[in-house]
Amino acid sequence: MPHTPDQPEAIVQITRYEVSVLPRTDINHRYFRLFVELTRGGWIVHDGHGGYDIDGDWAPGLAVAHEFADYEDALGLAKRLAPNVTVNGHTATEAYRRPLSPVVPAASEETGR
Image 1 (cartoon, rainbow, N blue to C red):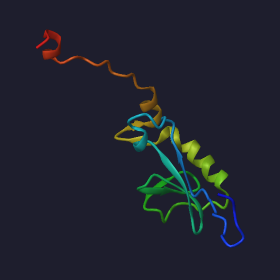
Image 2 (image 1 turned 90 degrees about the horizontal axis):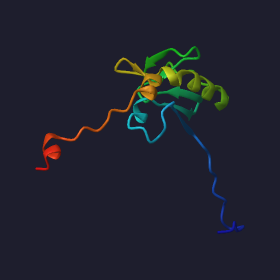
Image 3 (image 1 turned 180 degrees about the vertical axis):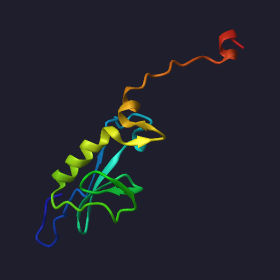
């Protein structure tokens, strides 16, 4: 629909990026991702539970999160941190490299019952 003088044009703005070493199709992607999000004070890096300061140190909540003036700097930090995001003692890189387990049929499937 073309813009008309009596209708204001819609403004589109990206306010959140998602960063992970796991592809979106990986079942564990949502656990090993970081967000770069625009706040009133600037762009912050967080995991949904806590924020990262300028040195990449995590703390609960978003109060510690460094506010970057430029999203590219925040994305740079998130990309640097992404391989080492740790969940239950496993890093994102370990999750990425894990071997896929073969599907083993149930005993009833093997016998045809």
